[in-house]
Length: 225
Image (cartoon, rainbow, N blue to C red):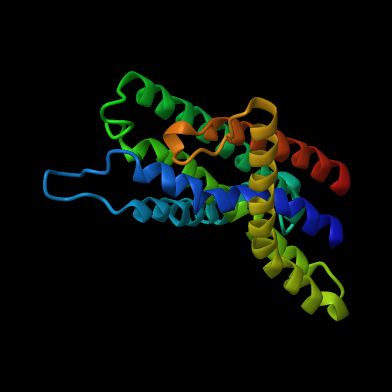
């Protein structure tokens, strides 16, 4: 259970960015739907639950029946495989977020008068939807694992571990940001996290998350193989 818990933390660090930096990016972009209506910044996060519902629906209605026919087992895709698929989607999420943030910074450089307000907030939609899909696989999987596949005497402990993942990963996310801020400020005399995102290098931080999540995926495959 401990290796499962540890390999869930880097994934949940990605989830933490969706409620912090991703939302902050949206606040700097064009949120107008019409001349009279401006979309609230935090409303973009609603795409993540939509992605999760979509992934669970596709899994239950399409992937599960198909995998049962292929493997001729009741579960079809194993719980560990389901978690692995979610981790793959988490890597894709931070890759897309790095690309979108790089695009936003280019808009800022080319149009400094309006910052990135000319860039639609819906550029962030893919990363929110994909992180929701990843959530449907990688966080729903551990819940099944800790409840179904552990000893009855350890079931309560397993559920406690599952529930602690999100909280622990938020602390780790803050710790990682503090370390990156200190190191980049010391090495290059300019932190990746400026007073505002337009003077920051959030795309570099996203690339760092790509490396962390990719290494974590490799470690997960090693642990579960």
